[in-house]
Length: 151
Image (cartoon, rainbow, N blue to C red; front, side, top):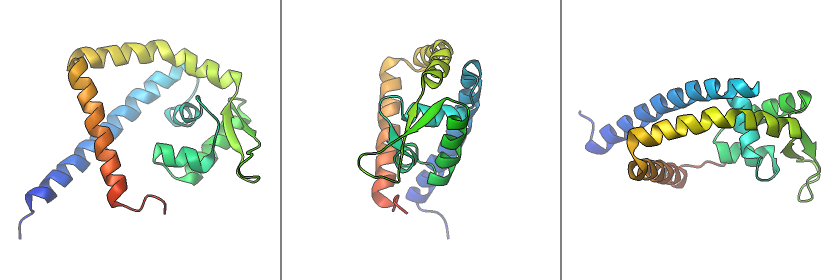
C-alpha cells in the first residue's frame, strides 16, 4: 500500500520542520553566545521580555514542556538573569520575569541577531520572508487545531 498525497505532504512538512528546527537551534546557539547564555535560556527569557508569565504560559507559547521551562527558569533565577514574582491570578504559579542582567544579555545578542535577520531577508526578499512566516504560523495553528496541545 502506498502513501496518499496527503501523507507524503505531511511527511515532507515534518522532515522539513525537523531540519529547520535544527538549523534554527544551531543559529540560536551562535547568536546567544555574546549574551553569555544558551539558546534554551534565550528562548525562555525571550518569552517574558514583554510581560512576566508563569512557567506553564511560557511552555505553551514556546511549544515545550512545562518541566523543561521550569528547569531553565530555575537556572536563570540562580544566575540572576530572571526572577520569580508573585502571580495575582494564581498564588502558587509564580511569574517569571527578566532581571536587568537578563535584559542586558538579550541586548548583547541583538546586533548579531539583526545581521542574521537582514541576511535572511536579503536571501528570501521581504515579501517571500513575510509569506514564509505567515505560512509557518498558519501551519502551527492548524496543528494546534487538530491535536490536543493541552496534555
